[in-house]
Structures are given as C-alpha cells and as structure tokens.
Length: 369
Image (cartoon, rainbow, N blue to C red; front, side, top):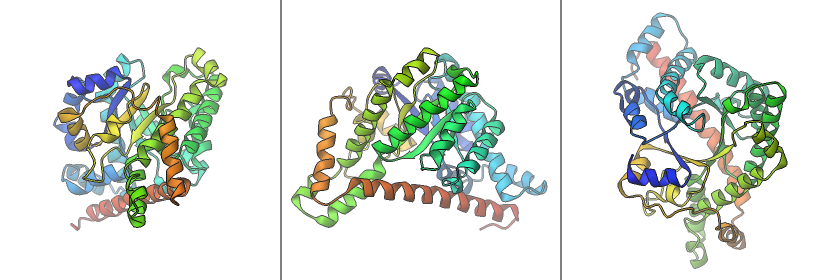
C-alpha cells in the first residue's frame, strides 16, 4: 500500500473510489487497486454512469444485444448499471469478508426522480437490492425529507444504505435518527445486524464553491478571509453530530446486539477551485471512523503528494462554529446555502439520469448522436 494511504488507514480513514465504468472492470484495473490496498470501497451516482455510457464504446455490444431483445432505454440502463455494480461487488467481496463488513462496499443509487417520494424510493431500493443480489451492495438514498423514512424502512428490511446528498449538520442528525430507528426495527424483525452496512455521505466541495461565489460578490476583506473555510467547517460540525450518535443510549443497545455504526463519508472531495490544494478535502477531514470517496484525480493527488497531519476534525469544533458565525455576520446564511445545494444536487442527478436514458434511447434506435 502507498505510504500516504497507509497513514490514512492508520488514522481510521477508509479510502473509496468515486467512479465505475466497464474499462475499470474489464482491464483489471479495479482489481489491481483493490489487491494493492489502494481502495477498499466504491461509490457511483447517475452522473458517473452517464459519463461511462456516453463517453466510451465499451457498452456497445451490450446495448446492441439489448436493442435486439427489444429492451427499452430505461430497462437497458438498469441492466448495464446493475451488471457493473454486481461485478464490482465481486471484486471487492474479499475486502468485505476480510474487514467483516466494515469496507468492501459498492453503492448504487435509486432513481433520483423519486427523491421526494418515500414509497417509490423504498420500492426502487428493494428492486436494486434484489437485482444486484450481493451482500456488499449499498443502495444510495438521498437525504431529503421524504428520504428519511425510506432510510429507516430499508434498514428495517436489512437493506444496506448509503445516505447521499447530506449538506447540513442538522440533516446529519436526522439521518442518524433514521439509522437508529431502522436498525432497531431490523433487530426486532430478527435480522442479523452485523450484515447491515450504512454510511452517511456529506458533500464537501460544493459548499465552498457556492459560499466562495457569494463571498467574491461581497468583495470585502472580511469576505476574502473566509474563502475556502465553509466546507471544512460544515463537515466538521456534521462529524460532531455523528459523535453525538455514538453517545446515544439507543446506539449502545444496537452495538451490543452486533450493529455496525453509521459512518460519515466525505463526498464531493474533488477540488473545484484550482487555487486550492488538490488534497485539502481529504487531509483536512481526517478523523476516526470516516470514509473518503475520491474521484480518480483526487486519489492520484493524495498518492503523489498528500500529507497526513493526523486527526483534523476532533478538537476543531470551536473554529468551525466561529467560521459559520463570521459568515452570518457578513450576511451569508449557511442554512440557506445548504438548502439550495440539496435542491441543486438532486436536480443535477435527475438531469444526468434522464440524459443518460435519452442517450441510450438514441443508441438503441441505431442512430448515432
């Protein structure tokens, strides 16, 4: 294992890859990354699958066969994406077994168009769980108001979940409550709690991108001094909510029954401002019990020149609260920004999902765009 990655693991950070495509699977590149200890898990989303399907010809034989079988574009998308996730699960299964379910997970997201429909989200999660049919798959459910009861319901049925699109510490707290409720129901139903996995994906870089934009509009020295500080402060306070869950008496009972904790997962860790260090959303969010899922470019940067400075979250809560207070003093209400980002995140994934279906429909019709 690379020395930097080993230091991250020693600090309690699990490194996952935020990418999946047919080339990674067929060339054996993902297998090599797993065998070398470079990554111990993998996440996907509709934008990742759209890129995979639209930018290469790797899926052409499968789509040709699906066209000949009369499959619709939606059916074809579901078939090829679940096939990729199933294969990735098999590649990561040894990690899952070796870590006794801590790592080795692969995530696949429910239809983002269902983000505000609890019942249909649950139904789609069940479909994905059955379709992939692997013990180390996590179904991604957005942390919308409608998503919270879906999270509880899926965990109650022993469906492992990756709760996605978390932007605020308050929503992290609500997700933790949904997790505790679902695991308690799973226990009452007689499910084996050790087999159920859950992570809470807190999005990071998008917060700085939006807050920095607003700071630049203000154009004052006070605003300039706050550039690049909001996302890390916000994530640190979300981790604080996770720590509160670990002190909850409900968690103590579940842990005694064999449950694994809901772990914070730092998502959107690729740097969007070229003036920032390209490893900042990894190195500044090191803390025990966390996952950092990285796009390939960020992972390469961490391996090449990342510097692990130890735990950068616990003990930094006062500074994080001060950053949020200073933002408020100059007129930037972070709660408003975070609500906007949640809605924008859902819209982005919905657009990627629909565009992917439209692109596949063109290919199935035998017409090249």
